[in-house]
Image 1 (spheres, rainbow, N blue to C red):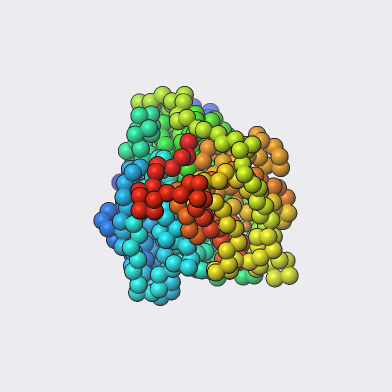
Image 2: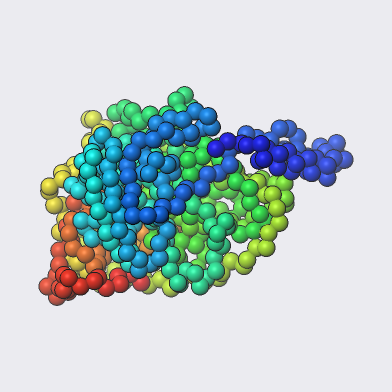
Length: 495
Ligand code: C2O
Ligand code: CU
Ligand code: CU
């Protein structure tokens, strides 16, 4: 997609009006930057396609990320970004996956709680040319989940190549809130890519990249470089997913004005939380409302990642431009709800055990990433957990880099960071990924239900994951909670 003629004309017209109104004052030096020169370059934000039908395939495809110069990317269904699934809580999903790549691949439904055989564990990777039928019931609350490949030691390469999409679940409780919808509800898949000198998404990590994670120089939004979006003076809902391999973002608006966090990984919060910025590690989601009614028509504001003190990656923490909003028309802003959904807090006093996960990197190679001094082994079960047990999991990070820790098969609750229970809005509610900053210990409450079988936990810095910072977690049934294996799972006790 490019800055087409129509967009250009609209832009030019907007600039003309601004120049006209501001004309005399412009002479006095009070001129908005946009009226002063040509409109900044940009590409209209792409929207992911919506997945329909009962099949999905993995295949390379030619994609014109930059207008006019297609490059070969790794895709689901030949598009980038990958198609968005949109389902209702309670829906059955049945999908035949075909792997048309020349290496194993599969689909992991990140954040969804599905039977272990459907979870996309790397041991269930599909051989080139093979197929697999995913079938599961979506039994969880409304939220922005996502999907991506999970083959052994190739997750990073395939995701970087372009394979990642939203899996949006809706439910009645959410609908009743009347949140912005339709063209006012926009998914934003944020992915940094290393494209300054080569725009083909080449993935060639060095040892240093394997140590820090593969960091890009540009944030691509829904497959759009230099993305711009025309908006009304209205409230928009953005479902933001950090789909980067390793890049941690600190979302903020360029004028530092506040936005409202209404949901995290596993769905809505109890109420909106106003923030001026929010960190987002790889795999985390934020559901946010931005009210553009405070801006004038003809104005712009940009979603950015603020500069922050990062890990040892040379560019981690660098300031990045994400998406420019052009305010182009009036709106009819709906009031922002004061409450959202009830959230039940699990009580740590009820936890039946504590497990510790110590995260380390072997600096002699920089490529060995470990949990409890072991790199991942496909057949070794590291943790055995009883279904239904409430546990405290401690992620201890003595390294100088952040590790966004993700657990399959559950949505957990964050207890504290270095014993401080004051967590930021981004870590409230239901989480499947929590960023564990350098030299920090994070405790979370977990409970796995209703399925048994082999799941996993790992760092979602994908180079760390592929480099071994991953562990097998087997959920076993407790005779006290034994269910009829043929029966449909109960709606999960998640709230
Ligand atoms: Cu999104 Cu096992 O990962
Ligand atoms: Cu996952
Ligand atoms: Cu890590």
